[in-house]
Image (cartoon, rainbow, N blue to C red; front, side, top):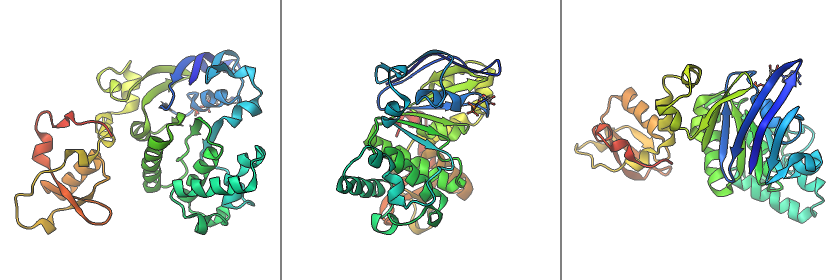
Length: 319
Ligand code: ADP
């Protein structure tokens, strides 16, 4: 779906991106990680021709991107960036409707699409469609930015630190929401971040960059066993294996019966929580059991620390 072959961009005689090859399959999230200045954004921007490579080939949906005008190319590619740049004098619905208006969709089709997208991103159309960006929280603005990129239903999304400008809690929520959204959208996504945890939560594949070079790429778990070199190992960090637990759902390790009598004293964890969150609650509470409940407070069973620590317990499936 997106293929880069030997893509290179030179600035002031120095390669910002150096002979980089990668492919993002249809419906996959490929996350590029690496320290600031390693060439992630430049790589991303070459895909929609905001930056023209000095050499190499880039194919999108089987076509060399140079065979289309940048404008035509960008119609099939949604682009989401940090501090989203919503137009301040336009309402939420006008912002989301930017591309449909450019494409001259009729008004009722556009209005329908806007409401559909607002519902998709969890904002009540009636409450939000006429608001201005300054009347939104950071997280809401970021969601609207995602909706705007999705408006014309492009098969491809480029996302450049899209959740970088919000507080850590909102950021986590947006990551989980986007991952859930992707289960129904199946977009082909090239995503850039310097945050390893974010990469682990979202990625089907991760690529680690340094100084313009893609050092290693593959499924997140492949980095556990065989990091390409010390830089990759150190950049992913010693708690990379712990981060991997955020890909697993605590609910999948349910359901033990609680052997005691005082169920009401067992710490509660939401059924949407990850195994990483469950472990951190085991540690902070000192309890050997957690009570899994859904959003409505209904019991979904118990999680047992002993059971989790038994050999083979980690054999469950990824989320
Ligand atoms: P990252 O996204 O990983 O932080 P970038 O792709 O933004 O990195 O930048 C890679 C390198 O290219 C950096 O050294 C940056 O200073 C340089 N660079 C990026 N854009 C330009 C530009 N328009 N002109 C000159 N140098 C640039």
